[in-house]
Image (cartoon, rainbow, N blue to C red; front, top):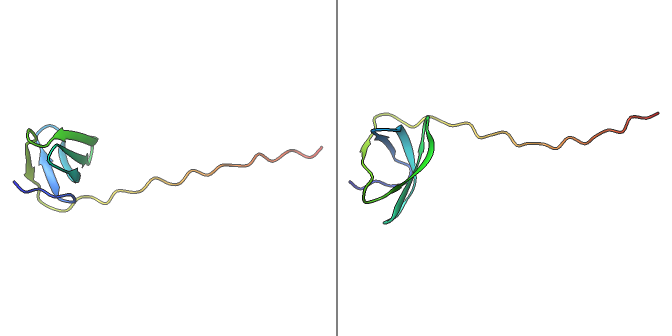
Length: 72
């Protein structure tokens, strides 16, 4: 099976996810519910999933809050 980064796949244990990176040694998948997982490419068993991957919200940037010195 010729899978490429960006394709939506299904795994028997982790469910559906999107391939993030893939080379001859490792395949990294961002699963919808299980998060990021890395597999040995030659041993990984995936099948093509139907539909489109869900749009994930990017985490909001954390802002530092400056402490305001209380005026006496």
